[in-house]
Amino acid sequence: MALRLWASSTANALKLSSAASRTHHLPSPFFLSRCFSTVLDGLKYANSHEWVKHEGSVATIGITDHAQDHLGEVVFVDLPEPGGSVKQGGSFGAVESVKATSDVNSPISGEIIEVNASLKETPGLINSSPYEGGWMIKVKPTSPAELDSLLGPKEYTKFCQEEDAAH
Image (cartoon, rainbow, N blue to C red; front, side, top):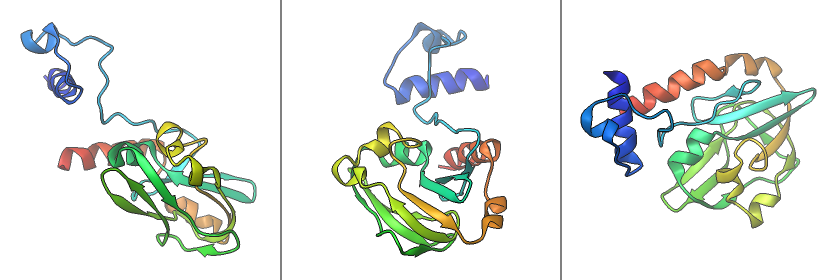
C-alpha cells in the first residue's frame, strides 16, 4: 500500500500518468520521487541542510541536495571573505533562488580559508553539483569534536523523510 501511494504521489508530482498508478498495480521501477535527494556517505549533515566533508585539517561545507531541490533554481550566492570565522549554527552567507532567499549556516566552527569563487559567476552549480562544484566554503575547524554532533547519512535521510512527511 505504501509503495502504491508513493508511486501515485510521485507520478502526480512529476505530472506523469501510468497504467500502474491508475489501476493500482505495482509501479514501474523507473519512478523517482521529486523529493528524492542524494545523501553521500563520508559526509556529516546538519539538520539545517548543510553538509561538511572533513579531510585532514580542512572541512568543506555546502548545502545538501535536499536543500537545493527545495530552493529551486539558485540565481545568486552571497559568501563571506576568506580569513573570517564561522560559528557552529551561525549564518555565513545566503542563497537566493527563484523561490526564496535562505541563510546558510555553518555546521562547525572554524576559520574560513577558501571560498568557492565559481559560485559568483555560476550559482547554478549548487543545483547541478551540490557536493562537488557547488561547495561553498572551506574552513579550518577550531573544534573538530563538533563533527560528532552532526547527523550521519542514514540519520539525515530519515530526518529529511520525516520533515517532508510533516509538510
